[in-house]
Length: 123
Image (cartoon, rainbow, N blue to C red; front, side, top):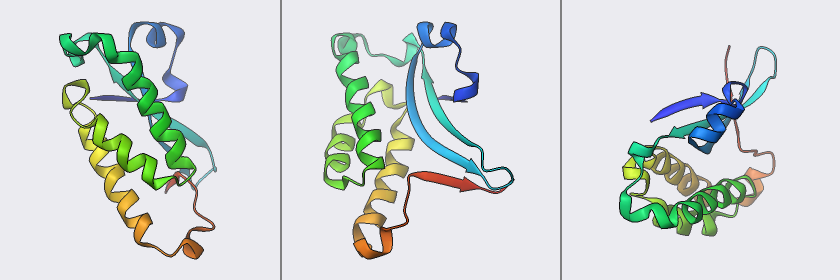
């Protein structure tokens, strides 16, 4: 799986490849926030799934939106349907996201009031 940051997304890349939003990062040094994207090529698509690509992209996008809203139930259901798609190229991300969601579900909602979906990285 190839990953790029939003500053690297050009119209040419967006036109030629499937881009799926992944995590959003904030650098502690300057507070700059950047989204990351998975870049999928034709080689990452199973021929039998061509007819459902748009639905898969839509489900992935809804997963990310609902993750930001802490709608854990939707996320768990979406992850179940997305596992194995894209020839498994995104499964590692889905596994990590699923583990994060399970950890959040176990926490007291009062402990999540200052939560946002952005991952802070030192730099």
